[in-house]
Length: 115
Length: 112
Image 1 (cartoon, one colour):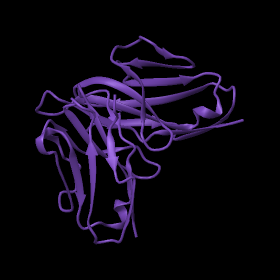
Image 2 (cartoon, one colour):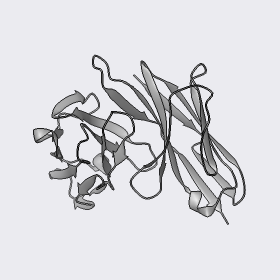
Image 3 (cartoon, chains in turn brown, cyan):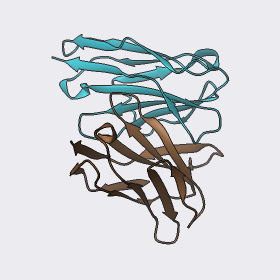
Image 4 (cartoon, helix red, strand yellow):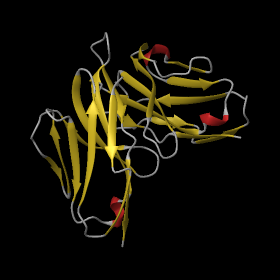
């Protein structure tokens, strides 16, 4: 069974702090790793990573994948109160017996940024 | 581009009643997912469709949950009869390629 584990489960910081969120995985037929931000209900897409060692950046957010050690990190620098959300890591793997991808999510990291 | 549409947004039912959720994916997206997200947890895949065929339903409690995707477009998820532990947000997502999924706003179900 595919498994995705995120840590920490929750994190409380102050504005301006830098945070690192972790995601480790055990899947068969790995295809990609995705990060989502969930503020109210619908998760919104942040990054998709397929290759090791190549950093993806978007503003103050960045992420990198290590396919040898089977983990990814999401960094947020100079955090703002608007960064408060649940950050979800998902791994796409080939669904057994098919050529289609299947997304498995971790339990999420709840980030709270205080002013 | 219109997003994934779900209805209703909220539903409160008594245990043992039945309930149905509807999802309209983004036009042209062949892959459709239903996820269950219990408070404090990550989304759990219930069922995945590719067009109107089921790719994965290994975590769908088939004694009470059912889903269909007629004509490979809209989908419905039904629970009959509902239990207290079914209280959750039910998220529908669609994808054109099977990796980057776009989510609807979800339906928050409360079973009392």
